Amino acid sequence: MRLTPGGLLVRGRRLPVQIGRGGLARDKREGDGATPVGRLRILGLLWRADRLPRPAGWARPIGPRDLWCDAPDHPAYNQPVRAPFAASHERMRRADPLYDIVLVTDWNYPKATPGRGSAIFVHQRRRLGAPTAGCLALRRADLIRLARRVRKGDEILIPPLAAFRGAQA
Picture (cartoon, rainbow, N blue to C red):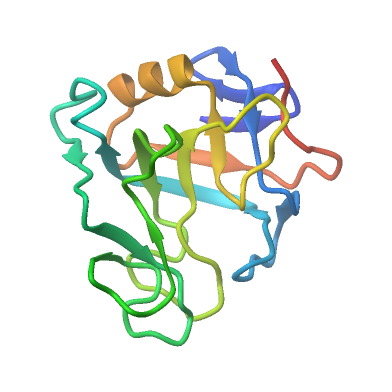
């Protein structure tokens, strides 16, 4: 998979994609809203079993207590954690459909460097043209199709595309 100005190129097909509101960054930092430039490996596949059928045999369900720590000063920074959890975190089981399917990348994970940025996922987009906080976001149908085909260890190449702000469709 490769990010291009026309979208995410996957096996010869271009999928419209949204990136972070901060554009692309070679030096990703926590809270900058940027999508990191580099080669990201897919390490996990999470899904809402109460909303969708299992997309692949290696997918893990997202439970009601599942969170992701985004507190750079906490020992669990950029790690999945469970509620109750006092430090800053993101809830994985959301009321909206953004995290109905989540591809977890190896950006600063599993061994995290504090402040280098957390949780670069591939997830469902909010709406056409809506940027992410740094993740890659796809249309629901494209994300479901991708989740059925992707394998652990597959890579996404994100080159430094200076003017790239997200492919529309």
